[in-house]
Image (spheres, rainbow, N blue to C red):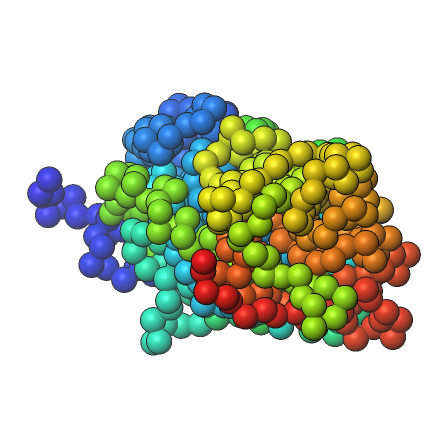
Length: 611
């Protein structure tokens, strides 16, 4: 449409510099439209009327929140384009930004490629691999019409009792720092002449990323989720902050604030760290977003004295508030706080400027609707091959026979009969862990597409080899069947966040009895599927070979690739493997350091020619 000269609107002109467009648009916005931009709501309460009438800035899918069960890429596109058209029908036509948790691939989506969780990627020590995973994830997210992901988690987990430890690349800030390379994978490489700290998204096949959770979420007392991180300023800066510094240099678009506290002060209310450190000192120019109902939890019980929480959160420097359900209450409170001079218009303008900057960076004003040519990227073979490579590189070999002269691995493909046992050998849901299909993860093989470890073993073994699968065989069965060797796959059942906090860190039943029954009676390899080190010392003497597979995701044949020697073991422990939970917290460099397997440990094997 050619507009008459008098109708020229600067903010709609892509030839204008971003700052000019932001200034022009903001000069036209009412207070109500600005507060609407600061509001993020859950898709279940989003409607055309709400988006249009409140000029809502963003919509998200909570964990597992989808258009319907097993929704396809086109179903997501249809839903999101519907929401976007409603936003575009508002007075100024400001597009909304849709966000989703894509923390190990596009994990909410049916048949997406699920990559290993971050703890496994930390074991690879391979930033280039992680960058490629970021690029593949961005393509799969864009395939469903979504431009924004709440990833990566750059927590430095200092205590494996924390239920989010698998979302952390390592206990070592250096490894976490290295793995921020996922950000240019998700967003594209920042041009060399770009100003540091300015968000950057390089095209329609890239997404806006989110470094989380700012700051110190992995350092809470006893690893209790959302709890208090007791550490001095120097410790906070040297352990928990480097990942943010590197993320900002790499142009990360957004930063999410942590539920946790630092020395008793809630991060969602910490003006010094959010405004002074993140925005002023580190020069971060993207927007700061709260966590889910994060400002509600400034008070206890949550949502009590909500007005005070809203005031503290916005005054601390949070720009976009993940409400997610009570947007009218939130908007009314912010409006009153501004009108009564408790929150300055400058603070509101700072928030809106940052949100609009990310939207302009994403080209949402030019291309607000989904690109439907990318739907075939979801779960593509190339991405599955990449995930399989990541699984191979993430495996850590902790034990391989009693001595180097008699290694158990690699296993022979040709054997008369082998036993595959354990609760995790034939369970995609267990293999993927939390944040898969639903928030807490799933049990079974019906929620996504992929290859179990059992089917990977079956495909890799020689056709003449008989494979017997028994989930939890008794000792007599093992003794009487004359197995050449056994592969036992056991571990933790899926969990996310607080539900994963654990004081005992044991393998899920009947895992321990499976280890005892099998390994007491035949040569055995135990593969642990877990989000963190688990109690293994009581069984270690019975186990001939021990492999940490972490939470490998949908491509279980990557485990078989290495067990049978098509590829060698190369992974190194991203975290210390304790003897007993009484030692925790225990990290490399501690004076009481006495691990079962130290940080950075990992035996290697050479590949044998595939037979």
